[in-house]
Amino acid sequence: MNPNRVVAVLTPLVFAPLAGAVTAWLAEHFPGFNVDQDQLQAIFIAGALIALAPAAQWLHGWQKYEERQAQSATASVEAEHATPQAFEEAEPGAAADLEDLAAFDELDDLDQLDELDDLAEDEELAGIGS
Image (cartoon, rainbow, N blue to C red; front, side):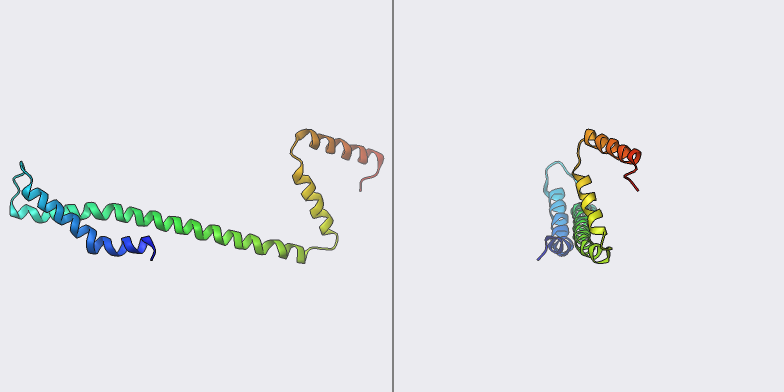
């Protein structure tokens, strides 16, 4: 059973009434507090609300966590399916283009990029390029 379900079920049934009862008992029996019987109900409700607020915040955070997990799983599945389709629909010469792109991705130094630019300019001047 997921922790979010435990919190969702037990908070209104167990934790909130227990917090209200403890708060009311402390208000009635704690030395120095003079609480009327009419005020005990308000203290009980305040104690119950104190227990509900953190539970609601925790459940909200848990839902956000599950949403992020689902989005990440969906993105990985979409990425997994997108790669084979790209190769199936590609033209015969596209594989060489993809290899060129892979080689380009390996370039991590700006000096190497400058050398490629210089080589491309030399090819254009020599009439080798398209």
